Length: 139
Length: 405
Image (cartoon, rainbow over all chains, first blue to last red; front, side, top):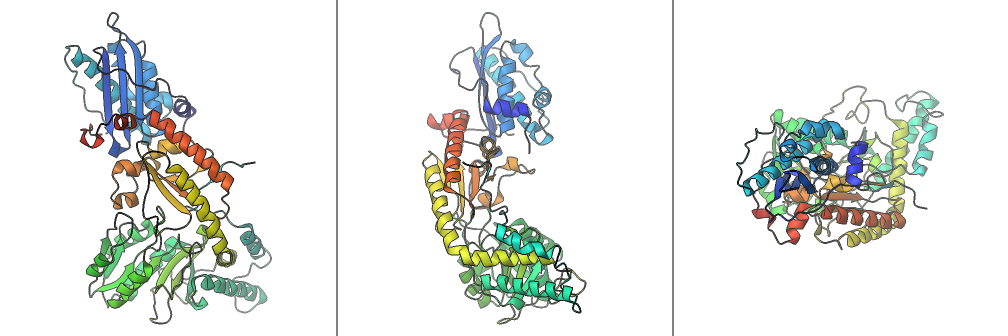
């Protein structure tokens, strides 16, 4: 399978690989996927207490090139967004941006799930209610 | 100068040896006759070339030339052996024994036979990929007509004890068929010493052309027959009709001759390189060889690099190095290798595997380059892997409740 140039670029030069201190109250962590399925994504956001903006985002991913690229792209998009705007990131935006083929759409779904999961973790830590999301279609 | 890309996927197919091509060329243009044209020189030339090739093929496996049935490849030979025996020996029974690690060409043919009313037992293998002979014996029934076990596995290179398997089949009056696609030409295979009744193999896995293979069908002790699956002009002792692929057969014959001639030298070179590759890659933490290393083809190494995913790993160097992976992502099914799973590997390890298949033309320079590229990519991806980080922190990944996905 041939990868798009954007997937290759994210794979070769991934943005925001790393780990944030998950014990901090303003850090939200999402860990999604499973080793048995061949992909696990961990996505973290650090929210500015004053502005409510995401000031940093990091990821680590076990998975194929498309999974790595999807999470790398997600962290890029998250930085500088408000938490509410971050919720609007849709997996199909990732599919479009990275030109993912149908067989790799689940990688983008996983990235969207990771974002939501990180945001919920942040909300719970800060005494906010967990948002209930509709089940993702591609699982 | 190292020429890129490096080819280390010789279990998928091998490059053709230039000496094979040279032997084939005249049979496309100058000597183009139909080997079945019995009444003019064009036909005679073609027939003579086929006869000579048949001898070259037979000699490699210790057979009589009359026992070689040319086919379009190993898949067709597998089909002919299994379906042909099932039909021919229907009055004796309908039970076939095979194994879960067989090639799809055998497994899917067995499934087809089940639909026709046949009964098939699929034996599981041990953790090292080898068959448990006691289980085989326990599975034998009075209605068992055929035992179908591959000589060597395509993914892990593990060599089955064919001689002992044959002895068990014989004890219960069943025939032994072996898909020896990966073994013939690489290691000594002798149909008499090994007690083989039928055997499938193909040209393009041993530096010959694609589109030509053979089914060995024993003629003596016992005399074995298969019902043709391709009807027509009665070629190949009426077991496989169709105009013979003369240039292909000539090339297949030449490839067999060269394999016999060069086997010792090739094996020595290739296994030395394979061992160097394997030893170097196993220096990485949490890297494991899949399958028996004792009973294994000299050119194969299948390694799982824990906490990195196979396809993601290959992407790090697949422009420059050709290997294959048991990762689900390389197939449309999203299921990881059924062979690795049959060894009892968890899906995570199956997802993390790479198969290296060396060949006659592999050089030390290529292996050094591969060691460097693979090691670098594994380390890079582990830095990016949440599982690696968790493992390093001492978190038991088995105890985590992973979100269903």
